[in-house]
Image (cartoon, rainbow, N blue to C red):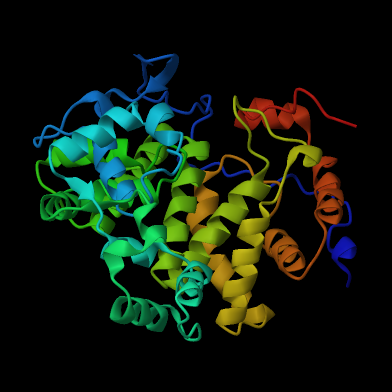
Length: 373
């Protein structure tokens, strides 16, 4: 039986759960906590927590500047996020870090490690020295044979090094750096959310404990508010972190939860999406495919894995286009290279079975306001 045979029109009504935990109120994303701060010649929205100094009298953005300065030449262009996300003037903050002795000018022995192999070889070649070897060997040859303070190429470099005071500060506020480096870009996990969390509990757990506490709290809030958008976002962050931690069985289950939500057809404001507006995230499909291969699943074993995800997700949805077998069939089709266009054709078959009056009258779910051609 082909995949289209599986979806031949039938009289069955769509799978709509009566006993569910989600009411039909509008799904609205929470408004981020923002304020307007004027900084020199620009005006931008800055989270107010970034304007409050830490106990060491530095701003959160200056902690990130300290980390950045330890990895870049001082003449490098400053990333825009210092101004537009953290609300600091890069030059002023860099001078603050210098004046307060968190950083200092690098010496030539420190600068040499910033050079690329080609630059190191040029120094050796200009001094009639052997140019073969890896970076460590090239540096050792230079420092053993040349007076490092007289190397013109190094004297031209303007770089900074973190002092012991700076290193201690980076260690103390490592959770801010971790949040900056692992910013989810949707407001869930970033330096602002981490600072708010740490300030609330009054101590600093390890970075992973902070991450899981914040994301799981967002998941619980989404469940309480019946917010599928935030729930999906939370599950995606959790799935990605589980994947990083190599907890692949849990990650696969979470990715499949997301796939099930994406195919449900649920939209904001009690409306369902027509098939033409349902999109599968390639990243989710690829992760499911990758992990199914990792576990060596055949179709039967993958189906049982999928059933666990289905059972944990379907009760949260007031409506789904598909039953569990149909949803698995499409997932299997997608991870084996099936086109999204073909999947939409299959969903269209299900869509054409829907009775609009039944959706609204019995379940409070509305027919699409607009159906694109």
